[in-house]
Image (cartoon, rainbow, N blue to C red; front, top):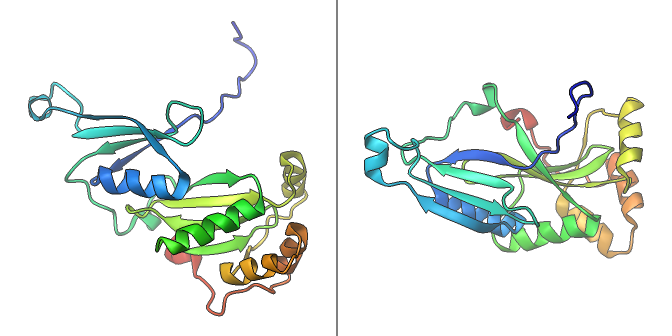
Length: 206
């Protein structure tokens, strides 16, 4: 038993409260490929007699080998906080793609489903697209620009975490289709070549 050294546990899952379990599980299925591995309803009598949890239903979802990566708790009267951006709490959650093509392909696929990102940016260390889920929780999908977590860490430690270069996803997709390499696209993004015609104001969402 280790009682002296700090153990580094890995993040395994997180939980979200929602008023619409169906909408959330469907959105995460479409966007991240999440599968519902378990879903249950809590009997009303258990809730009103305080013999059970305060939520009416819950669902465990995952998009990999783990039994669940997210658990949704449905509370029918829960409301989305209109001022949540000004309050303490979880700001966003990020999921990583293996390649830039996976990220761009995801963008194109979701656009075809009518699911468009709030904004996109090259942060130097990675290229990121951000979406709002149905409850306005910000979900980031990104790719490591260096292809190596160690190189990315050294990049951050060297003081390169500056203002992100905003990206118009359509411009980035078009440039990739011409044959530009991911690294070339990264450099061109930082130079401002793919900047959107109308910059996104992150303070409205972050």
